[in-house]
Length: 449
Image (cartoon, rainbow, N blue to C red):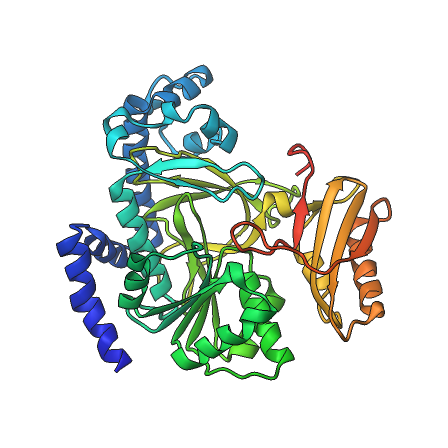
């Protein structure tokens, strides 16, 4: 029955709603992107460069801020940005710049028809940004394509462990019902709600599960603790946080299916997703994703991520520094898609720790320090100064102090003897406002982070 509904939704209901009722071009863009993905890498590079040249030309003439930003650098017009190397030399766009020059970044012709969103502001400073209807429709198309690489298709029985509004509207409920979705609020996850969440999962028997990493890990831990076994879905898609290898292994073991990582941000929606071969493909026919400065000085280390939306003419964000870190990918994926690969997402730059001598210490070190720790339900490392890291731990009933000493030794080795490690026990480590658990938090000045 579910297969019949999936086919009816994909071929009848969704087209009728999206193209007929809402008059959106989402399906047209989806067909375009599905064709593009099989182009050879050099063809995709040419397509991307053509789109980028058009965007640069447009921004120079229609978005006041870019002329003001580039003229002092000796750029007299679009003709001075002849190559990718020329483009890469332009200074990145930062969040403080967007806040300070918001109106100048909006193309006057689109001002009255813009759509707006605000980021969650994990650093305490939410960011408002605008985009066009075309950009939104293309983003939705790219999301459906990327989820499809894992076999997740619209109309499938899909359970979301996601951040939800406090009081979903009737329209929200009908929308999710039509999509064949069940929504579990990641913001409300606790010991009291975990049982009912597991019951909903068991009754619904989802083919696909989509969720934030931390809530999925917590549910997996709860299922193990309580000896619960749920009907195995066909796949789990993770999002919103960096997925570390031990977390992937735990989710796959408990849910009994492969995990596919996705990466995006509110400013652009989906940026990269894993395919059936677990190659993390960037959407290079839709966005330009650049790897900027290496945070530890090495070529194979984490790099700052710089993103350009090639289709947002309302408020174009050119070379936007979104605060995340990624590693370079190598070669071409066995799936045959020409879309380039990322080596992995390392999380937010602000979540990287630093040793007293200035070395970069990725959050992965903290994850591995507590790997196998007995009786540790949750942990978090917070750095406020270069010479001190505070580690909070939520203990479970079978807590073993020796596990903490092992974690201390591993972290001390990574950070060096000049860094003091201060461990403290607490009853709870709250999720962020957007339902995420940050393994590491750096409050250092940006010159260090």
